[in-house]
Image (cartoon, rainbow, N blue to C red):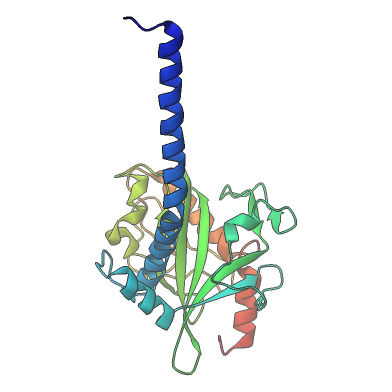
Length: 261
């Protein structure tokens, strides 16, 4: 016996409903694990950019967590005052969430980095010596490339000027072109470069073509071949976050403090 059109439509609708409920339930169930994986990936990036973990390491999640907890101290900073915010737990602090709150973020448009708003508070990471003095400072950076917003970390030595390393944990740039921001060879050109000039103004830049060795071009890094706009975007985002609209006031406080703790 043939089925009526109403039966067929009803059956199809029921199947779609069951499938949508299953998919929604699966997404909800997997979300905590996905969030945990994001946290782990960022911990890996921080450990890598300061030199405590090799690029492409096969360390287990437990080993990564242990290495991070033993060597990295996260702190929340007020970007306007440059002071630490001690009453906020750095482990649960959500910097991106602040961007949707007009009371907790600042409109900085227009700017070359294409960043519409910056949070009034931000997370930073310290590597310290046995006496508690700062050895490496890791600062989050973000800004527009060609096709996407790049999110990453810039690590500075204790002089707050010399680059220890740079890395990106999220972007949508073209593989083989702008996506070469992930290439270890290109990232290896950053250590030793200087971010600031004598007046503590951020002048580091990714140039078109080859920049040359650190001794000859302390403020310049080789451009990404075939990716001029992504290269320019990296310049703009680093300069933005190292300036007064980003971590400039915080860096000034650290310089004035002297002990860098």
